[in-house]
Amino acid sequence: DGKNSDMAHLVSTDEIEPVTNALRTAFGLELFGFDILVKHEENDVHSNKKEILVVDVNYFPGYKEVSNFPSLLAQYLTQKAVESRLQNFYHNR
Image 1 (cartoon, rainbow, N blue to C red):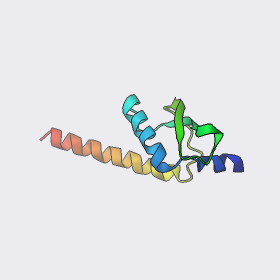
Image 2 (image 1 turned 90 degrees about the horizontal axis):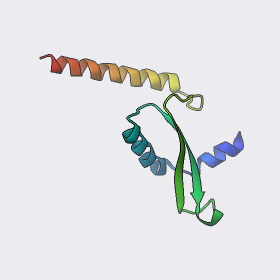
Image 3 (image 1 turned 60 degrees about the vertical axis):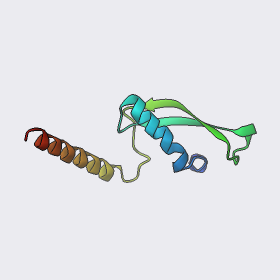
Image 4 (image 1 turned 30 degrees about the vertical axis):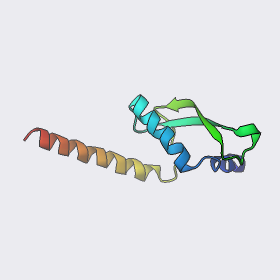
């Protein structure tokens, strides 16, 4: 709904990327989803000072919000297959 899409703009890609990278490293996941709470200073949603709290990490999330997910998944799987073939090729030389 409109309310949720408005809320999504409260956290930028630059702000969420370090969180994503930390979760990827901590849990060894590549495809995952997570939920956050955003705590703003003194209840001011337009404040630049905010705290991002991860409240759930899902290693098998739904991707209905990702409009081009089938294409992205195909790209990801192709990339992993190519990397695996190259690794095996160079390892067996």
